[in-house]
Every structure is written in C-alpha cells, then in structure tokens.
Image 1 (spheres, one colour):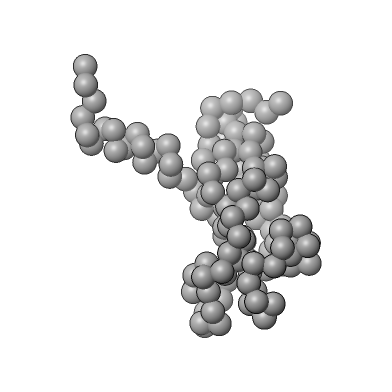
Image 2: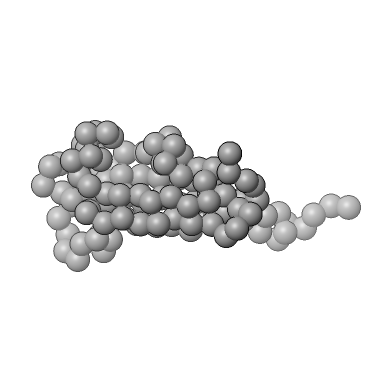
Length: 118
C-alpha cells in the first residue's frame, strides 16, 4: 500500500520540526521531555539571529555559530537539561559569533523521542 503525499509530508514535518527554545543573555532555560522520552537536539545556534528575540530595537543581526554538537552534549539523550547563557562562558567555549557590542542568545530546537537515558 502506498502512502499519500499528504501523509508523507506530515511524517517528514514530525521528524524535522520541533520545539524551539530561545535563551537570552544571563538567562537559564529548562528543556524537558515527558516520562519515557528523551531529548533529541535538532538544531542549535548561538548569536544574533533576528530582531525581536531578547531585544526590541535593531542593533544588528544575522551573525551566529552553529552549535549543534555542543548542544547535543548538553541535552541529547537526557530527559531534561538546563541551558545557561552567560556570555563569558559561551564566548570562551564557542567563540565570539558577533561583534562584541551585540548581545547573543541561544536558540535550540529539539524533539522528544521514545527512549531511556543511559
């Protein structure tokens, strides 16, 4: 039996969509999945991606670093994780993605998948 195009698109959307969490400068966010599910980080960026996130006026944007591997270490395979955005720590660990005068934020998109933590 062949799948309809609509069902195929829905399945792909479910595989690649996720919950996006934005963590502003000096803030901490808790990423959590229900019991019997674990976090699967799908994308993660650190920088200044767009206006309106963590700021209300245009001071520049469009600079970021892909931090998927780092966010994977922080969260993937766990039921919950806390992500902190403290500039000195982030810039030292990941490098400065934007000019120094721009405040960077973290954006992590994750899904919850069936699994157990090891």
